[in-house]
Length: 281
Image (tube, rainbow, N blue to C red; front, side):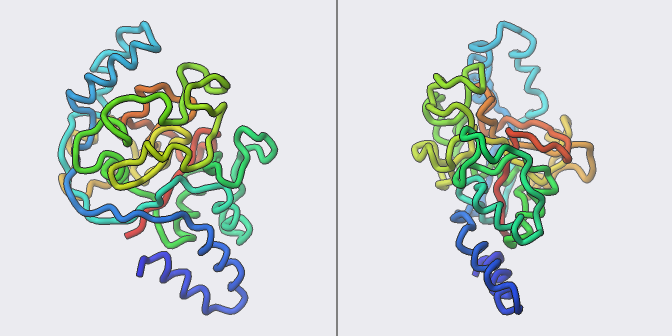
């Protein structure tokens, strides 16, 4: 039985918690099993062949689009990841609200009235690292490591995007340059409901791994970490000033959606671009 179900079962037996537990059980997103195996982590020469032209499509700056600009994702290296489970979609606002109602999670810092970002099936955004971590613990999980995230997004092969090797502007909630542009080719002005791009699923069937909301991972960020990363279940540096986020957001350009792209965000940041999903041992 998955750990989160064991947790819910145990809580179910405690007096006074029946209704809260039932609500969490119903609203927890579907979970996908990611088998153990090796994955190529980081930006490879193949990925650079994809990233650089896409970068130049939105920028004339030779320096910001040069291979050296992606040094924090190099060198590409293979790592072994043990089997784990991962939410099939980003955590929704409906699911997160149960944690808030149970007085475990702080309310998300995003509009509850703006139809572009407020909706039960939209990803919850405006949550800090601690908020995301607390929710995952609430449902019996944890935040994924960035290596686990890339394993789930890339699969066993070397695809550059979760949905395949080629960029398709209609398969991710992102932007060609202006995040609130209603004419974006993906059809959404800002956020999109989770599971809006079924043809963009990763090889393991995980959805929403490109665009919509950046996703918190458990790893501290270091630009030089890939040079010293362990080759089995890497978990990032032991300390740092920021955490790694993955996947890009609705404001991201195409080249930020590659599975190898990583960014750093201060832990206490609560931004409309920041969401998450949970992993389970």
